[in-house]
Amino acid sequence: MNSYNETVKTLTERVLSRLPPPAFLTMPAVGLALSDRSVQWVELCPKGRGFVVGTWGELPLPEGALEGGQVKDASKLIETLSLARVQGGLDRVIVALPEEHSYTVTMKLPKVALHELRESILFSLDQYVPLAPSETVFDYAIAYAPRKGDEHHEVIVSAVALPLVREYEAAFAQAGLTVLAFEIETQSLARATGPLHEPLVAMVVDIGELRTSMAIVRNGDVWFSSTAQFSGPKGAKTGSESESQQVKSTPLSTLYGPLVEELRKHIDYWNMNGRLRVDDVGRRLTGEEGKVTMLVVCGGEANVPGLVQYLGGELGLPAEAANPWRNVLSFDETIPPISRADALRFATAIGLALRPIVPRITP
Image (tube, rainbow, N blue to C red; front, side):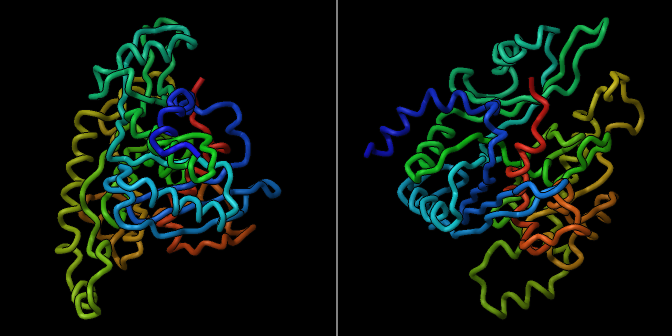
């Protein structure tokens, strides 16, 4: 068997074809989300006019396997992925890449033929992200296609460093799993929890065990994203029972005040500088249009009593706990095996499983 490093080397050319998604992404696949602490997977199977959950599960990831989303101990990662493959009966997977090592930017480019758009993006990419084009893997969605008389395209580009993708794909290959596509984490969250094909602008917030991801979402696409090193008090699971009780008796403003300020900073930036410049028919936005109008909260912390309402009240926005099933199934027709509380933690994996069903609009 080839060593891990040899596998990395031989997979270089394969990685380059992983983004954008190939045509065979319509094949059944399992969404698989990695964090520094766990591996989660969800499969969606067609049934009638909707979908039902197939295999799903979660395994703890040994400490030191991943740190900040980067592979630090490949053997530990491969061992856990191999166990997930056996327990879940996994074969083909769609995998989330860590938000803290990715970039989502909006690019305005001169009008070109659609088949020349990828080359046009590549030519200008280093003006938007601090990565060498030769060491970058990117995906894109068209935000605004030029109409008669227009002279530009507007595209949303998600980019990640190629060496990171190589490491991930090598580990999955060694574990006996076939990666059909990689996707940046916040795009998966947007697909699962955000309103699709609606003009409203939402901030989707995922409060995880070690960090918080934020994304500005419109029409199911991520226009802006960022990561904050905030996990909330429930992120530390080593506390004693007395410490847990102390946390429960502490005001939300004390526990989550820093998160409110982080969210406010990013919302203010978007509303003042980054908000949408055109609507779906090319009309220029004015006044309050294009500003963030709602807050969607997911991750384990969304289960904290009163937190969603507190965040919305402090930010002056309607707020709701995410429903990761909103674009998957109707509760009138089926009850998923994953509880609502757990579904908030599985939102990324659910969004990945939705990718073949609700793909990004990319030529």
